[in-house]
Amino acid sequence: MTSPANAPLAQRAPRKLLRRLLPWLASLALLATSACGGAMATGTVSPRISQGITKLNSELAKGDGNSWRSHFIDVGQGLAVLQEFPCGAVLIDVGGEEDDKFQSDAALLRYLDAFFERRSDLKGLDLLLLTHPHVDHTRGVAAVLNNYAVRNLVDNGQGSGSGAPGQLVLQQWARDHGDVRYRAVALADIADNRGLVDPILDPVKCPAIDPQITALWGRVDSDPGWPGMRFGKTPFQNGNNHSVVTRIAFGRASGLFTGDLEEPAIRDLLKRYAGTALLDVDLYQVGHHGAANGTIPELCEAMTPEIAVFSMGPPQWQMTWSAWKYGHPRRQIVEMLAEVMTRKRKPIEVQVGLKSETFEPMTVEAALYGTGWDGTVVVEMMADGRSRVLTAGR
Image (cartoon, rainbow, N blue to C red):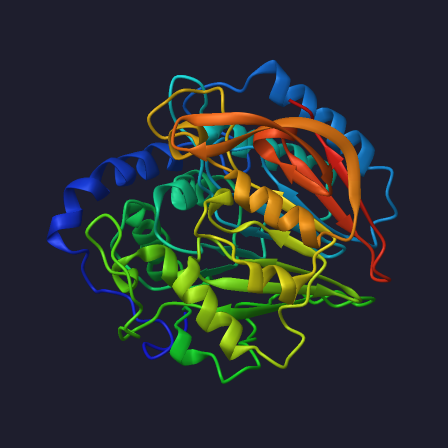
């Protein structure tokens, strides 16, 4: 583990979180009784998901293994992105939807099992990174840690939020396993406009093409005075604005993964990296599942992405914690990105949100993909900048 200065973990979970943490710890103990490497999860995976996973892995097995693949795993309303490299693997977030329609932990483990079966040369995850402690980003922490070897753990060091139990499990795991390295990423750790790179954040070292994983944002320790109140919280009190933002580069290919960062923090992100090329990327994980406050025109102009992917659930699932309830993705975000995309896709008619619980059809021709539209989406990028997109179908 890193030094206390680099890994500020609370020595004890806050008492107000204890009751919320207990069910997660019970789940952790239950999962610990299973054999490591064999997926054990409550709930089942639909035949559609299983068939899609089989289809994707069959196609991916035909590749030459010298590419970088971002797997936007279909976890319903949430985020889980598996980064596959020639010599390693990184998982960004493990959230997802758990309701009568979908069991995200089961879907995530089913996908990871198939991945490691195909990539039998890999013996686990080089890194598990949590962007921020909200449950749609941390739900599957216990399941992943108990089923797969994980060598490095990263989060933003916070201990509150709807997904705090999962993040606290990750932090406790780091304390209990001396062979696992951990760090918490704070904005104060990130030097000026160069981003942060260290062996914990970037543990993948491939001999031919070495991926570069750089943190551009993290926990903000003092209130910048961001204006605006939403749902009784200031932007500083909103955990989304403390998301660990990462940039991945693989030769000439690059991608930006912003978690749920919202407009006030995005504007500061743009100021920090103005005049650099760090925000100019080919692939964009659309912020905050396509919410109206997760992407702004200035960010689109800085990125000029070829491909963008929304991680969200299908709009027809009318559940309390769903894309339907949140109105994700919003039409204005889809339109905003479509204007700057430099690549096309086969036209598809999708449902886009006007507001919570209200959607309308829209034809998408730009290279915009979504797990709620396409099932799992895999973006494969070559070191020379060439790319292709595979989808599991829905």
